[in-house]
Image 1 (tube, rainbow, N blue to C red):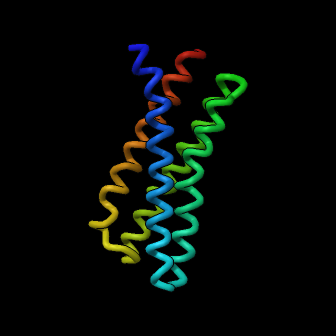
Image 2: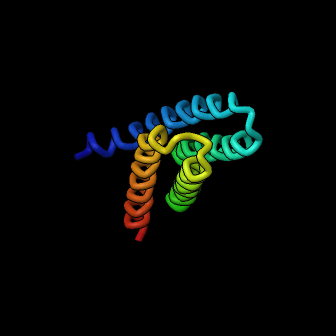
Length: 126
C-alpha cells in the first residue's frame, strides 16, 4: 500500500509529461494545415496541456495541504479544458476524431486521477 502511494504521484507526473509531449506533436501537426482556426485552437490546447504537469510540479512543493489541493485543482481545471479543446477539434473537423480517441481517453484518465488525488487530500485534512 505504501508503495502505491509513493508510485502514484510519480506516475501522474510521468503521464502528464508524456501527455504534454504528445500535445506538442499534435500542435505541430495542426500547424502544418495553415488554417487560422486550427492554429488558434491548438495553441489554446497546448497551453492547457502543458499546464497540467507544471501545476502538479508546483503541488509537489506546496507549503500546506490546502495549497497542494489548490494546485492540483488548477491542474484538474486545465485537464478539463483540454477535453473541451480536443472535442472542439473533432467537432470542427480540424482533425479526424478517430485520431483523437486515445488522446481523449488519456485526458479522461488524467481527470479521474486528479479528482481522486484531490478527494483524498481533502479527506486527510477534514
